[in-house]
Image 1 (tube, one colour):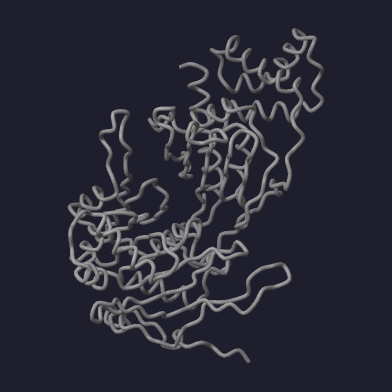
Image 2: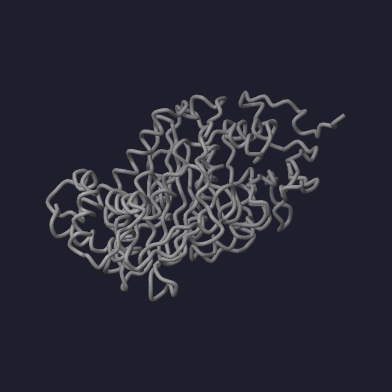
Length: 473
């Protein structure tokens, strides 16, 4: 195996080892310990508001010479041996190239070379920082990171477009994916499950662009969502009971609003006795139950053939005798197959979709059903939706960067040609504090859902007081 191939392999293994090491000290899985709260240790901030000083020409030339030397002279050695010998390699290169001035910050130089050899180059520290949730590379000279719901420009830079492409190749090569001018877009994932999207020139004018949505090493529990302010204890009790009562639940919201996190928490309440089939574009769900079958879509090959889409997997899952079907995201014709599954005995199904409100989600579902190519009358589609869905949970990312559940809405049925929706809980904003944080909470509307009796019949008892707003004295 060539050194470049071993570097690719080492990059994946390095991230996986870090994940394993962190998980070894994690608390029990939420499927069995939902009353525990995970305490995440926050690293020092990496996000800056301006660029770091531009690396000098001598610095960049020295780095390039070091890589050329390693690839030519040390190609057969193990990566660990090369990393351990970096001091002597740098000294040798400096002695042979007297025109290059001595580099003052050897520690930084060695760290950058080590990241290129064993990790994902300059963005490796961001991927290992638990407090960073998203990494965005907009060409070689601009790298953004998200922390606490806020985007910030980092002081990280790549050498050039080729450097970004080399890191991107490390990501996609082990997955059997390819990215080049003939196939300039790719969806992939890291070994820890982090979702990666990349698009390169000529489509991306600023250079290779990579967006990485990081995968939480320790799955969030319902108590984490309460601690983050996403919802409160009464609402948590309600959605837990809704999952246990096998209601069909749809989580809707905008991009980056936390839909998948909420879906993962909802999934953790599914009984360990159920056979669960998960269907996703890129596997992100972390379920701790014993009987889980995970399915993932497949893109077309170089000839444009062999693609397997969400809809194909939904139809196939019905033949797998699932007790629960969990769909990562519904965005097309698979909506029809999902609704039919919910209407034909597959109760307790969960899914997510993009929308701005529960009412918008219903309208989008109508559109997505039409995308299935079936010429169905609108009323028939609405009957399918009203008969299938029980609850829509609306999640939003507010202006201060926080992610909140803003509506828990019951789908009550069809009256005439209109699907009747009724809010059970809504987010009420009371102001903004001095730090710009939105003050508010999810409060009950005072209306008890129609499926309350169904919960009681299932042996799930919810106090009626959770549907009444508490008056603060």
